[in-house]
Image (cartoon, rainbow, N blue to C red; front, side):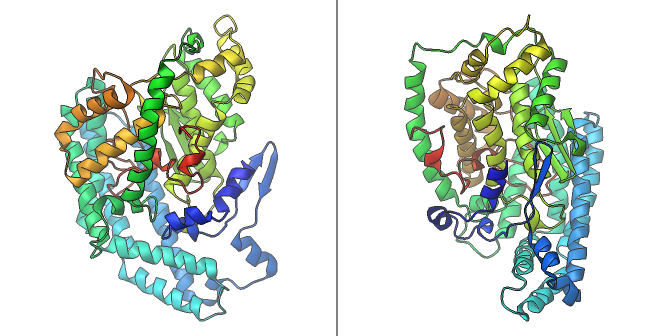
Length: 517
Protein backbone atom coordinates (compact mmCIF):
# COMPACT_ATOMS: atom_id res chain seq x y z
CA UNK A 1 0.00 0.00 0.00
CA UNK A 2 2.91 2.34 0.74
CA UNK A 3 4.38 1.55 -2.66
CA UNK A 4 1.17 2.31 -4.54
CA UNK A 5 0.56 5.55 -2.68
CA UNK A 6 4.08 6.69 -3.51
CA UNK A 7 3.62 5.52 -7.09
CA UNK A 8 0.60 7.78 -7.47
CA UNK A 9 2.67 10.79 -6.44
CA UNK A 10 5.70 9.95 -8.58
CA UNK A 11 6.45 11.76 -11.85
CA UNK A 12 5.30 10.03 -15.01
CA UNK A 13 7.82 8.38 -17.26
CA UNK A 14 8.94 10.36 -20.28
CA UNK A 15 6.82 8.19 -22.56
CA UNK A 16 3.75 8.54 -20.40
CA UNK A 17 4.24 12.26 -20.03
CA UNK A 18 4.32 12.70 -23.79
CA UNK A 19 1.11 10.68 -24.10
CA UNK A 20 -0.65 12.85 -21.53
CA UNK A 21 0.88 16.21 -22.25
CA UNK A 22 -2.18 18.07 -21.06
CA UNK A 23 -3.07 15.73 -18.23
CA UNK A 24 -4.00 17.17 -14.87
CA UNK A 25 -2.14 14.24 -13.29
CA UNK A 26 1.20 15.70 -14.37
CA UNK A 27 0.67 18.76 -12.19
CA UNK A 28 -1.15 17.60 -9.08
CA UNK A 29 1.32 18.01 -6.20
CA UNK A 30 2.03 15.41 -3.55
CA UNK A 31 -0.41 15.71 -0.69
CA UNK A 32 -0.60 13.89 2.61
CA UNK A 33 -1.40 10.19 2.50
CA UNK A 34 -2.22 8.18 5.61
CA UNK A 35 -1.55 4.50 5.05
CA UNK A 36 -2.48 1.79 7.54
CA UNK A 37 0.17 -0.90 7.82
CA UNK A 38 -1.10 -3.27 10.48
CA UNK A 39 -1.54 -1.11 13.56
CA UNK A 40 0.94 1.52 12.36
CA UNK A 41 -0.05 4.77 10.67
CA UNK A 42 2.47 6.15 8.20
CA UNK A 43 1.84 9.72 7.14
CA UNK A 44 3.80 11.39 4.38
CA UNK A 45 4.23 15.11 4.55
CA UNK A 46 1.96 17.21 2.38
CA UNK A 47 2.31 20.86 1.42
CA UNK A 48 0.26 22.10 4.38
CA UNK A 49 2.37 20.07 6.79
CA UNK A 50 5.57 21.49 5.34
CA UNK A 51 4.25 25.04 5.59
CA UNK A 52 3.21 24.55 9.21
CA UNK A 53 6.51 22.94 10.21
CA UNK A 54 8.63 25.64 8.62
CA UNK A 55 6.41 28.45 9.75
CA UNK A 56 5.89 29.42 6.12
CA UNK A 57 3.18 31.87 5.14
CA UNK A 58 -0.02 30.43 3.67
CA UNK A 59 -1.76 32.25 0.86
CA UNK A 60 -5.01 32.47 2.84
CA UNK A 61 -3.08 34.42 5.50
CA UNK A 62 -2.13 37.15 3.04
CA UNK A 63 -5.02 37.01 0.55
CA UNK A 64 -8.58 37.63 1.69
CA UNK A 65 -9.74 36.63 -1.80
CA UNK A 66 -8.09 33.23 -1.53
CA UNK A 67 -9.54 32.65 1.94
CA UNK A 68 -13.04 33.41 0.63
CA UNK A 69 -12.43 31.24 -2.44
CA UNK A 70 -11.63 28.26 -0.19
CA UNK A 71 -14.79 28.91 1.83
CA UNK A 72 -16.97 28.88 -1.29
CA UNK A 73 -15.28 25.75 -2.68
CA UNK A 74 -15.78 24.00 0.64
CA UNK A 75 -19.52 24.77 0.61
CA UNK A 76 -19.82 23.40 -2.93
CA UNK A 77 -18.03 20.20 -1.96
CA UNK A 78 -20.16 19.63 1.13
CA UNK A 79 -23.39 20.00 -0.85
CA UNK A 80 -21.98 17.63 -3.46
CA UNK A 81 -21.37 15.11 -0.69
CA UNK A 82 -24.99 15.44 0.36
CA UNK A 83 -25.93 14.65 -3.23
CA UNK A 84 -23.76 11.55 -3.00
CA UNK A 85 -25.59 10.33 0.10
CA UNK A 86 -28.92 10.77 -1.69
CA UNK A 87 -27.53 8.69 -4.53
CA UNK A 88 -26.31 5.94 -2.24
CA UNK A 89 -29.69 5.79 -0.56
CA UNK A 90 -31.36 5.55 -3.95
CA UNK A 91 -29.32 2.53 -4.99
CA UNK A 92 -29.26 0.69 -1.67
CA UNK A 93 -32.15 1.61 0.62
CA UNK A 94 -34.80 3.61 -1.24
CA UNK A 95 -38.09 1.89 -2.20
CA UNK A 96 -37.87 0.57 -5.74
CA UNK A 97 -40.80 2.06 -7.62
CA UNK A 98 -41.38 4.73 -10.22
CA UNK A 99 -43.15 7.20 -7.92
CA UNK A 100 -40.35 7.21 -5.34
CA UNK A 101 -37.77 7.49 -8.12
CA UNK A 102 -39.59 10.54 -9.50
CA UNK A 103 -39.54 12.19 -6.07
CA UNK A 104 -35.82 11.49 -5.73
CA UNK A 105 -35.30 12.87 -9.21
CA UNK A 106 -36.98 16.12 -8.16
CA UNK A 107 -34.74 16.30 -5.08
CA UNK A 108 -31.59 15.64 -7.09
CA UNK A 109 -32.65 18.15 -9.74
CA UNK A 110 -33.23 20.89 -7.16
CA UNK A 111 -29.88 20.23 -5.50
CA UNK A 112 -28.09 20.13 -8.86
CA UNK A 113 -29.58 23.51 -9.77
CA UNK A 114 -28.28 25.02 -6.53
CA UNK A 115 -24.85 23.47 -7.02
CA UNK A 116 -24.64 24.58 -10.64
CA UNK A 117 -25.47 28.16 -9.70
CA UNK A 118 -22.79 28.08 -7.01
CA UNK A 119 -20.22 26.60 -9.39
CA UNK A 120 -20.96 29.25 -12.04
CA UNK A 121 -21.37 32.28 -9.79
CA UNK A 122 -19.46 35.20 -11.32
CA UNK A 123 -18.38 36.20 -7.82
CA UNK A 124 -16.50 32.88 -7.55
CA UNK A 125 -14.69 33.52 -10.83
CA UNK A 126 -13.72 37.00 -9.66
CA UNK A 127 -12.35 35.58 -6.40
CA UNK A 128 -10.35 32.91 -8.24
CA UNK A 129 -8.79 35.47 -10.58
CA UNK A 130 -7.99 37.89 -7.76
CA UNK A 131 -6.45 35.02 -5.79
CA UNK A 132 -4.32 34.11 -8.80
CA UNK A 133 -3.06 37.68 -8.95
CA UNK A 134 -2.27 37.62 -5.24
CA UNK A 135 -0.31 34.38 -5.60
CA UNK A 136 1.65 35.72 -8.59
CA UNK A 137 2.61 38.87 -6.67
CA UNK A 138 4.80 36.83 -4.32
CA UNK A 139 8.09 35.08 -4.89
CA UNK A 140 7.91 32.60 -7.77
CA UNK A 141 7.06 29.12 -6.52
CA UNK A 142 6.13 30.28 -3.02
CA UNK A 143 2.48 29.34 -3.51
CA UNK A 144 2.77 26.73 -6.27
CA UNK A 145 0.23 24.35 -4.72
CA UNK A 146 -2.29 27.13 -4.27
CA UNK A 147 -1.63 28.30 -7.83
CA UNK A 148 -2.35 24.80 -9.13
CA UNK A 149 -5.55 24.59 -7.08
CA UNK A 150 -6.70 27.88 -8.59
CA UNK A 151 -5.74 26.73 -12.09
CA UNK A 152 -7.87 23.60 -11.73
CA UNK A 153 -10.83 25.51 -10.33
CA UNK A 154 -10.61 28.20 -13.02
CA UNK A 155 -10.63 25.57 -15.74
CA UNK A 156 -13.65 23.84 -14.20
CA UNK A 157 -15.49 27.13 -13.77
CA UNK A 158 -15.11 28.00 -17.45
CA UNK A 159 -16.42 24.58 -18.51
CA UNK A 160 -19.29 24.55 -15.99
CA UNK A 161 -20.34 28.07 -16.92
CA UNK A 162 -21.00 26.94 -20.46
CA UNK A 163 -23.61 24.41 -19.30
CA UNK A 164 -27.10 25.88 -18.75
CA UNK A 165 -28.56 25.38 -15.28
CA UNK A 166 -31.64 23.84 -16.87
CA UNK A 167 -29.51 21.14 -18.50
CA UNK A 168 -27.72 20.31 -15.25
CA UNK A 169 -31.08 20.00 -13.47
CA UNK A 170 -32.54 17.90 -16.28
CA UNK A 171 -29.58 15.54 -16.13
CA UNK A 172 -30.06 14.90 -12.41
CA UNK A 173 -33.81 14.42 -12.75
CA UNK A 174 -33.37 11.96 -15.59
CA UNK A 175 -30.69 9.92 -13.82
CA UNK A 176 -33.16 9.00 -11.08
CA UNK A 177 -35.76 7.94 -13.64
CA UNK A 178 -33.26 5.99 -15.72
CA UNK A 179 -31.81 4.27 -12.65
CA UNK A 180 -35.23 2.85 -11.83
CA UNK A 181 -36.02 1.83 -15.41
CA UNK A 182 -32.62 0.10 -15.73
CA UNK A 183 -33.31 -1.95 -12.61
CA UNK A 184 -36.79 -2.86 -13.88
CA UNK A 185 -35.46 -3.75 -17.34
CA UNK A 186 -32.69 -5.88 -15.87
CA UNK A 187 -35.11 -7.75 -13.61
CA UNK A 188 -37.40 -8.44 -16.59
CA UNK A 189 -34.48 -9.01 -18.98
CA UNK A 190 -36.24 -6.64 -21.37
CA UNK A 191 -34.08 -3.98 -23.03
CA UNK A 192 -37.14 -2.23 -24.47
CA UNK A 193 -38.09 -1.07 -20.95
CA UNK A 194 -34.85 0.92 -20.74
CA UNK A 195 -34.24 1.88 -24.37
CA UNK A 196 -35.87 5.32 -24.40
CA UNK A 197 -34.26 6.35 -21.10
CA UNK A 198 -30.86 5.21 -22.33
CA UNK A 199 -31.34 7.19 -25.53
CA UNK A 200 -32.05 10.27 -23.41
CA UNK A 201 -28.92 9.55 -21.33
CA UNK A 202 -26.83 9.65 -24.49
CA UNK A 203 -28.59 12.77 -25.74
CA UNK A 204 -27.98 14.67 -22.51
CA UNK A 205 -24.40 13.39 -22.34
CA UNK A 206 -23.64 14.69 -25.81
CA UNK A 207 -25.39 18.00 -25.21
CA UNK A 208 -23.45 18.55 -21.98
CA UNK A 209 -20.11 17.70 -23.62
CA UNK A 210 -20.78 20.01 -26.54
CA UNK A 211 -21.56 22.90 -24.19
CA UNK A 212 -18.42 22.24 -22.14
CA UNK A 213 -16.25 21.98 -25.24
CA UNK A 214 -17.17 25.51 -26.24
CA UNK A 215 -15.59 26.92 -29.40
CA UNK A 216 -12.83 24.29 -29.56
CA UNK A 217 -14.20 22.35 -32.52
CA UNK A 218 -10.91 20.46 -32.82
CA UNK A 219 -11.90 18.27 -29.86
CA UNK A 220 -14.33 15.45 -30.62
CA UNK A 221 -17.46 15.05 -28.50
CA UNK A 222 -16.21 11.76 -27.13
CA UNK A 223 -12.78 13.16 -26.25
CA UNK A 224 -14.50 16.00 -24.40
CA UNK A 225 -16.46 13.40 -22.44
CA UNK A 226 -13.25 11.53 -21.60
CA UNK A 227 -11.62 14.73 -20.42
CA UNK A 228 -14.08 14.89 -17.55
CA UNK A 229 -12.41 11.92 -15.89
CA UNK A 230 -9.04 11.39 -17.58
CA UNK A 231 -7.78 14.86 -18.41
CA UNK A 232 -5.96 15.03 -21.72
CA UNK A 233 -6.93 11.54 -22.89
CA UNK A 234 -8.11 11.38 -26.51
CA UNK A 235 -10.31 8.84 -28.23
CA UNK A 236 -7.62 8.25 -30.84
CA UNK A 237 -5.21 7.00 -28.17
CA UNK A 238 -7.80 4.56 -26.81
CA UNK A 239 -8.49 3.27 -30.32
CA UNK A 240 -4.77 2.63 -30.77
CA UNK A 241 -4.36 0.78 -27.47
CA UNK A 242 -7.53 -1.28 -27.72
CA UNK A 243 -6.92 -2.15 -31.36
CA UNK A 244 -3.57 -3.65 -30.44
CA UNK A 245 -4.98 -5.54 -27.46
CA UNK A 246 -7.97 -6.95 -29.33
CA UNK A 247 -5.89 -8.01 -32.32
CA UNK A 248 -3.62 -10.08 -30.10
CA UNK A 249 -6.08 -11.28 -27.45
CA UNK A 250 -8.76 -12.85 -29.64
CA UNK A 251 -6.45 -15.44 -31.27
CA UNK A 252 -4.60 -15.97 -27.98
CA UNK A 253 -7.88 -16.76 -26.23
CA UNK A 254 -8.78 -19.27 -28.92
CA UNK A 255 -5.40 -20.96 -28.49
CA UNK A 256 -5.74 -21.15 -24.70
CA UNK A 257 -9.23 -22.64 -24.96
CA UNK A 258 -7.85 -25.44 -27.14
CA UNK A 259 -5.58 -26.58 -24.31
CA UNK A 260 -6.52 -29.89 -22.64
CA UNK A 261 -5.05 -28.65 -19.35
CA UNK A 262 -8.04 -27.13 -17.61
CA UNK A 263 -8.08 -26.38 -13.86
CA UNK A 264 -11.02 -27.89 -12.00
CA UNK A 265 -13.58 -25.36 -10.77
CA UNK A 266 -15.47 -27.56 -8.29
CA UNK A 267 -14.54 -25.33 -5.34
CA UNK A 268 -16.38 -22.31 -6.79
CA UNK A 269 -19.84 -23.84 -6.30
CA UNK A 270 -21.39 -25.65 -3.37
CA UNK A 271 -23.13 -25.15 -0.04
CA UNK A 272 -22.05 -21.53 0.32
CA UNK A 273 -24.91 -19.46 1.76
CA UNK A 274 -25.00 -15.72 1.11
CA UNK A 275 -24.57 -14.73 4.76
CA UNK A 276 -21.35 -16.73 5.00
CA UNK A 277 -20.10 -15.23 1.74
CA UNK A 278 -20.73 -11.75 3.10
CA UNK A 279 -18.90 -12.67 6.31
CA UNK A 280 -15.75 -13.89 4.55
CA UNK A 281 -15.88 -10.98 2.10
CA UNK A 282 -15.85 -8.52 5.00
CA UNK A 283 -12.97 -10.36 6.69
CA UNK A 284 -10.88 -10.26 3.54
CA UNK A 285 -11.60 -6.66 2.53
CA UNK A 286 -10.79 -5.37 6.01
CA UNK A 287 -7.64 -7.52 6.04
CA UNK A 288 -6.30 -5.72 2.95
CA UNK A 289 -6.91 -2.32 4.53
CA UNK A 290 -10.53 -1.20 4.21
CA UNK A 291 -11.50 0.48 7.48
CA UNK A 292 -15.19 -0.22 8.08
CA UNK A 293 -15.12 2.19 11.01
CA UNK A 294 -15.22 4.87 8.32
CA UNK A 295 -17.64 3.14 5.96
CA UNK A 296 -20.10 0.31 5.56
CA UNK A 297 -20.67 -2.68 3.29
CA UNK A 298 -24.12 -3.12 1.76
CA UNK A 299 -25.76 -5.09 -1.05
CA UNK A 300 -26.92 -3.56 -4.33
CA UNK A 301 -27.96 -4.67 -7.80
CA UNK A 302 -24.42 -3.97 -8.99
CA UNK A 303 -21.34 -3.43 -6.77
CA UNK A 304 -20.04 0.13 -6.44
CA UNK A 305 -18.10 2.49 -4.17
CA UNK A 306 -19.53 5.74 -2.80
CA UNK A 307 -16.88 8.08 -1.35
CA UNK A 308 -18.56 10.89 0.56
CA UNK A 309 -15.32 11.88 2.26
CA UNK A 310 -12.21 10.02 3.49
CA UNK A 311 -14.13 9.42 6.72
CA UNK A 312 -17.23 8.02 5.01
CA UNK A 313 -16.45 5.64 2.16
CA UNK A 314 -19.17 3.07 1.50
CA UNK A 315 -19.03 -0.01 -0.69
CA UNK A 316 -21.60 -2.48 -1.95
CA UNK A 317 -21.39 -5.99 -3.33
CA UNK A 318 -23.77 -8.67 -4.52
CA UNK A 319 -23.85 -12.37 -3.73
CA UNK A 320 -25.28 -15.48 -5.38
CA UNK A 321 -26.31 -18.39 -3.20
CA UNK A 322 -23.98 -21.35 -3.77
CA UNK A 323 -21.40 -19.39 -5.79
CA UNK A 324 -18.87 -17.38 -3.79
CA UNK A 325 -16.47 -16.05 -6.43
CA UNK A 326 -18.42 -13.04 -7.68
CA UNK A 327 -19.37 -11.62 -4.28
CA UNK A 328 -15.95 -11.98 -2.68
CA UNK A 329 -13.97 -10.74 -5.66
CA UNK A 330 -16.37 -7.82 -6.22
CA UNK A 331 -15.99 -6.81 -2.58
CA UNK A 332 -12.19 -6.82 -2.91
CA UNK A 333 -12.47 -4.74 -6.08
CA UNK A 334 -14.65 -2.12 -4.41
CA UNK A 335 -12.40 -2.31 -1.36
CA UNK A 336 -9.51 -1.22 -3.59
CA UNK A 337 -11.44 1.88 -4.62
CA UNK A 338 -12.37 2.53 -0.99
CA UNK A 339 -8.84 2.15 0.39
CA UNK A 340 -7.65 4.72 -2.13
CA UNK A 341 -10.39 7.12 -1.05
CA UNK A 342 -9.84 6.53 2.67
CA UNK A 343 -6.18 7.45 2.26
CA UNK A 344 -6.88 10.83 0.67
CA UNK A 345 -6.30 13.91 2.82
CA UNK A 346 -9.35 15.18 4.68
CA UNK A 347 -9.72 18.05 2.27
CA UNK A 348 -12.73 19.42 0.37
CA UNK A 349 -10.64 20.64 -2.57
CA UNK A 350 -10.38 18.96 -5.95
CA UNK A 351 -6.59 19.09 -5.93
CA UNK A 352 -6.65 16.61 -3.05
CA UNK A 353 -9.20 14.27 -4.64
CA UNK A 354 -8.63 11.19 -6.80
CA UNK A 355 -5.84 11.78 -9.28
CA UNK A 356 -7.85 10.42 -12.19
CA UNK A 357 -10.29 7.65 -12.96
CA UNK A 358 -7.42 5.64 -14.42
CA UNK A 359 -5.51 5.90 -11.15
CA UNK A 360 -8.68 4.99 -9.26
CA UNK A 361 -9.29 1.87 -11.30
CA UNK A 362 -5.64 0.89 -11.03
CA UNK A 363 -6.17 0.61 -7.28
CA UNK A 364 -9.31 -1.52 -7.43
CA UNK A 365 -7.92 -3.82 -10.09
CA UNK A 366 -4.57 -4.04 -8.32
CA UNK A 367 -6.32 -5.72 -5.39
CA UNK A 368 -8.82 -7.67 -7.51
CA UNK A 369 -6.52 -8.84 -10.28
CA UNK A 370 -2.93 -8.69 -9.07
CA UNK A 371 -3.43 -9.65 -5.43
CA UNK A 372 -6.66 -11.66 -5.25
CA UNK A 373 -5.67 -13.88 -8.18
CA UNK A 374 -2.27 -14.72 -6.70
CA UNK A 375 -1.19 -17.96 -5.07
CA UNK A 376 0.04 -16.09 -1.99
CA UNK A 377 -3.38 -14.55 -1.43
CA UNK A 378 -5.14 -17.90 -1.50
CA UNK A 379 -2.60 -19.45 0.82
CA UNK A 380 -3.78 -16.78 3.26
CA UNK A 381 -7.51 -16.85 2.38
CA UNK A 382 -8.19 -20.58 1.98
CA UNK A 383 -7.99 -21.36 5.73
CA UNK A 384 -10.43 -18.49 6.36
CA UNK A 385 -12.79 -19.95 3.75
CA UNK A 386 -12.64 -23.35 5.46
CA UNK A 387 -13.27 -21.76 8.84
CA UNK A 388 -16.25 -19.74 7.58
CA UNK A 389 -17.95 -22.25 5.27
CA UNK A 390 -16.96 -25.30 7.28
CA UNK A 391 -14.32 -27.77 6.15
CA UNK A 392 -17.02 -30.29 5.29
CA UNK A 393 -18.22 -27.85 2.58
CA UNK A 394 -14.88 -26.34 1.58
CA UNK A 395 -12.28 -29.10 1.69
CA UNK A 396 -9.92 -27.70 -0.92
CA UNK A 397 -6.25 -26.76 -0.94
CA UNK A 398 -4.96 -23.25 -1.67
CA UNK A 399 -3.49 -24.59 -4.92
CA UNK A 400 -6.88 -25.92 -6.04
CA UNK A 401 -8.57 -22.60 -5.27
CA UNK A 402 -5.79 -20.70 -7.04
CA UNK A 403 -6.24 -22.83 -10.16
CA UNK A 404 -10.03 -22.53 -10.15
CA UNK A 405 -10.10 -18.78 -9.70
CA UNK A 406 -7.65 -18.29 -12.57
CA UNK A 407 -9.33 -20.70 -14.99
CA UNK A 408 -9.98 -19.20 -18.43
CA UNK A 409 -13.59 -19.64 -19.49
CA UNK A 410 -15.51 -17.06 -21.56
CA UNK A 411 -18.66 -15.89 -19.79
CA UNK A 412 -21.52 -13.45 -20.25
CA UNK A 413 -20.77 -11.29 -17.22
CA UNK A 414 -17.85 -8.86 -17.05
CA UNK A 415 -17.48 -8.88 -13.27
CA UNK A 416 -17.16 -12.68 -13.37
CA UNK A 417 -14.67 -12.69 -16.24
CA UNK A 418 -11.25 -14.27 -15.95
CA UNK A 419 -8.01 -12.35 -16.39
CA UNK A 420 -7.65 -13.16 -20.08
CA UNK A 421 -11.19 -12.38 -21.24
CA UNK A 422 -11.84 -9.34 -19.01
CA UNK A 423 -10.18 -6.84 -21.41
CA UNK A 424 -12.44 -8.00 -24.24
CA UNK A 425 -15.55 -7.25 -22.17
CA UNK A 426 -14.15 -3.76 -21.65
CA UNK A 427 -13.29 -3.21 -25.31
CA UNK A 428 -16.78 -4.33 -26.38
CA UNK A 429 -18.38 -1.67 -24.18
CA UNK A 430 -16.04 1.04 -25.37
CA UNK A 431 -16.72 0.28 -29.03
CA UNK A 432 -20.48 0.36 -28.57
CA UNK A 433 -20.48 3.56 -26.56
CA UNK A 434 -18.14 5.48 -28.84
CA UNK A 435 -20.16 4.49 -31.91
CA UNK A 436 -23.43 5.62 -30.30
CA UNK A 437 -21.85 8.96 -29.41
CA UNK A 438 -20.51 9.29 -32.96
CA UNK A 439 -23.96 8.54 -34.39
CA UNK A 440 -22.89 5.40 -36.27
CA UNK A 441 -24.87 3.06 -33.98
CA UNK A 442 -28.48 3.57 -32.95
CA UNK A 443 -29.46 2.95 -29.33
CA UNK A 444 -32.16 0.49 -30.43
CA UNK A 445 -29.49 -1.68 -32.08
CA UNK A 446 -27.28 -2.02 -28.99
CA UNK A 447 -28.52 -5.51 -27.96
CA UNK A 448 -27.80 -7.02 -31.39
CA UNK A 449 -24.42 -5.34 -31.64
CA UNK A 450 -23.57 -6.49 -28.12
CA UNK A 451 -24.52 -10.08 -28.87
CA UNK A 452 -22.65 -10.09 -32.19
CA UNK A 453 -19.45 -8.78 -30.56
CA UNK A 454 -19.69 -11.27 -27.70
CA UNK A 455 -19.83 -14.03 -30.30
CA UNK A 456 -16.97 -12.73 -32.44
CA UNK A 457 -14.63 -11.81 -29.60
CA UNK A 458 -15.47 -14.34 -26.89
CA UNK A 459 -17.32 -17.09 -28.72
CA UNK A 460 -20.32 -16.69 -26.39
CA UNK A 461 -23.97 -16.82 -27.45
CA UNK A 462 -25.92 -14.30 -25.36
CA UNK A 463 -29.42 -15.58 -24.70
CA UNK A 464 -31.02 -12.78 -22.66
CA UNK A 465 -30.70 -9.00 -22.26
CA UNK A 466 -29.89 -9.45 -18.57
CA UNK A 467 -26.89 -11.55 -19.56
CA UNK A 468 -25.99 -8.99 -22.19
CA UNK A 469 -26.33 -5.24 -22.42
CA UNK A 470 -28.36 -4.79 -19.22
CA UNK A 471 -25.84 -6.43 -16.89
CA UNK A 472 -23.73 -3.46 -15.85
CA UNK A 473 -24.03 -0.32 -13.87
CA UNK A 474 -21.32 1.84 -12.39
CA UNK A 475 -21.81 4.52 -9.78
CA UNK A 476 -20.47 8.04 -9.98
CA UNK A 477 -21.11 8.31 -13.70
CA UNK A 478 -24.38 8.99 -15.49
CA UNK A 479 -23.87 6.90 -18.49
CA UNK A 480 -23.64 5.66 -21.54
CA UNK A 481 -20.98 2.92 -21.33
CA UNK A 482 -22.52 0.84 -18.58
CA UNK A 483 -26.06 1.91 -19.37
CA UNK A 484 -26.53 3.18 -15.86
CA UNK A 485 -27.43 6.65 -14.56
CA UNK A 486 -25.18 7.76 -11.76
CA UNK A 487 -26.64 8.56 -8.41
CA UNK A 488 -23.91 11.05 -7.73
CA UNK A 489 -22.85 12.93 -10.84
CA UNK A 490 -25.02 15.78 -12.13
CA UNK A 491 -23.47 15.37 -15.56
CA UNK A 492 -23.97 12.74 -18.24
CA UNK A 493 -20.60 11.44 -19.30
CA UNK A 494 -19.10 8.19 -20.54
CA UNK A 495 -17.56 5.95 -17.91
CA UNK A 496 -13.85 5.60 -18.43
CA UNK A 497 -13.55 3.53 -15.28
CA UNK A 498 -13.39 -0.05 -16.47
CA UNK A 499 -11.04 0.67 -19.31
CA UNK A 500 -9.15 3.42 -17.53
CA UNK A 501 -7.01 0.68 -16.02
CA UNK A 502 -5.57 0.04 -19.45
CA UNK A 503 -5.01 3.76 -20.04
CA UNK A 504 -3.48 4.74 -16.71
CA UNK A 505 -0.11 6.44 -17.18
CA UNK A 506 1.26 4.28 -14.36
CA UNK A 507 0.61 1.05 -16.19
CA UNK A 508 1.72 1.09 -19.83
CA UNK A 509 -0.28 -1.47 -21.84
CA UNK A 510 2.78 -3.64 -22.47
CA UNK A 511 3.23 -4.22 -18.73
CA UNK A 512 -0.13 -5.91 -18.11
CA UNK A 513 -0.24 -9.62 -17.52
CA UNK A 514 -3.56 -9.53 -19.38
CA UNK A 515 -1.86 -8.78 -22.68
CA UNK A 516 0.02 -11.18 -24.95
CA UNK A 517 3.30 -9.42 -24.26
